[in-house]
Amino acid sequence: MPEPRFERHLFICTNARADGHPRGCCASKGSADIAKAIKIAAYDRGLKGRVRVNKAGCLDACEEGVSAVLYPDGVWFRGITLDDVDELVERTLVKGEIVERLVSPGHPRAAGS
Ligand code: FES
Image (cartoon, rainbow, N blue to C red; front, side, top):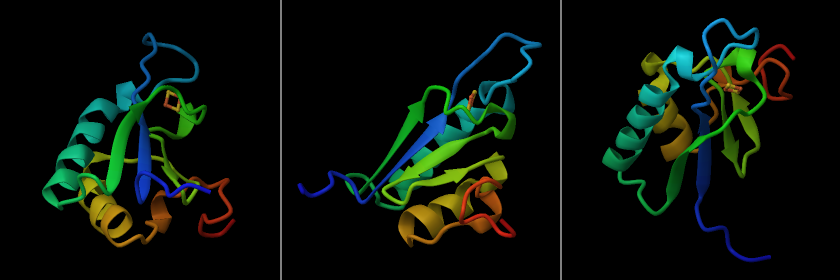
């Protein structure tokens, strides 16, 4: 198997839907600003070339947004806010720890599931 290009790859949903859509969307919860803040924080922590942060389309976890998925860990995060950015970058992207309170409740790693 080839070496992975990045140690970690975080995809953040920035999908937008019209106001009033029954599923809502991550864009209406500030995902563009959150994605930008995570990218800047990751760059500031010297992760360029080691960790990749990308905007993504809908991850089909809209009700839990702002949603993101991390590879190769395969961990799904939910409810990310700007207040979570520094911790997510420092603990997860720099140290490889998972911020358990942000793990999607249906995920095997979620506390109490
Ligand atoms: S709109 Fe973000 S997961 Fe669907």
